[in-house]
Length: 281
Image (cartoon, rainbow, N blue to C red; front, side, top):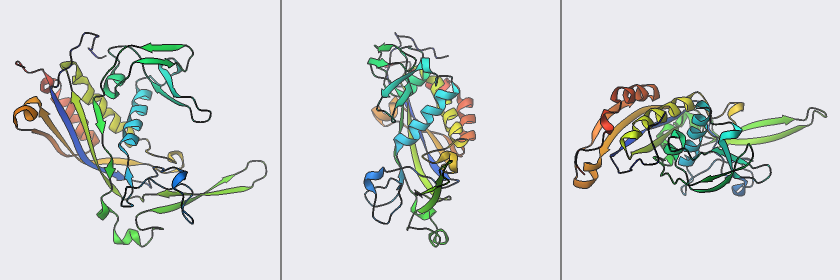
């Protein structure tokens, strides 16, 4: 349980920076929406940057980690969820509470205002909590798509997976195609965790738990049909305290070349010693 209270004062202590690789163990589909459908293209294209290269939006990684942590901590139940969208067929529910020690809301932030609870009734949130975790868009590492892989791709950088939905009554097939980044592709990830008070010392462990949960779950669409298995590798963990930004102090490299399990173990070793508030302002 977090030690945060309504009186906890926030002042930057430092930033934990995680950089490394996101490997596709199976094809990855992060959809661009059907508004970008091209003639002769897949029904469900992947999102691409201005140069036509696939990337993984930071919001996709961050949102998936949040959803998995909500499930792991027992917060994905009607009494803990609110609607942020109620459009029919496109309802979106997330966890939010007004508790000052709610670690999910501390890590991902929350805004004040009235929200409708999924279990019925409203919540009138009065706490505005700054998000501690920032996740940036992850660009594709072009050389991870090898020449041998390109020979078997449907496009320069992507493959097209064909699927069939079968009507259980008539047995009529409804074919569809899914564009995917192929297994073996690699993306560069960068995530920054702000430590704004000594009570934030539990957040790095919660974040590392989210990375490990993601590796045994899926990212993007089509996860239950084989897409979206990923793993983290070559992770570098760096600590930059307030002095780094104020007067050009040195950063500290805490881990290098780690996987998600190694990163979690290193964070556990560090404990809360690194995140104590400086003796002077």
